[in-house]
Length: 73
Image (tube, rainbow, N blue to C red; front, top):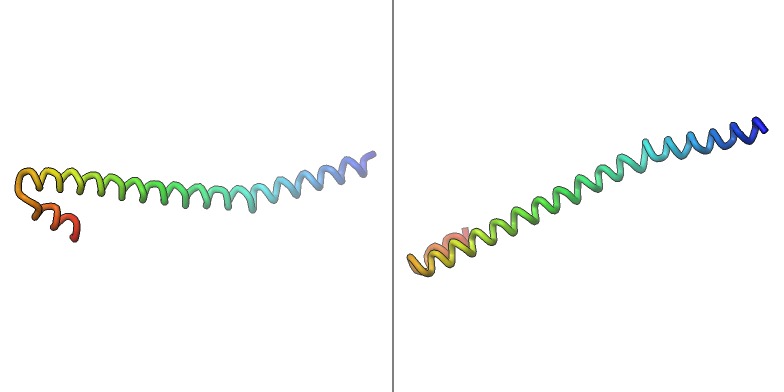
């Protein structure tokens, strides 16, 4: 009976170690990568929306020069 208990205890300790040493660090790294990618994508979308708004404003106010400068800068 005590052998079974200690065998199960060792199994549980190995699982705990695997979680804390392997799974959790990999999980954190993956989460950080995804968060960075989403932030980068969000910045690109905001920049594009800003360029488009300025371009529309430029077409109505100053012609297409503003659009050209923003688009190819």
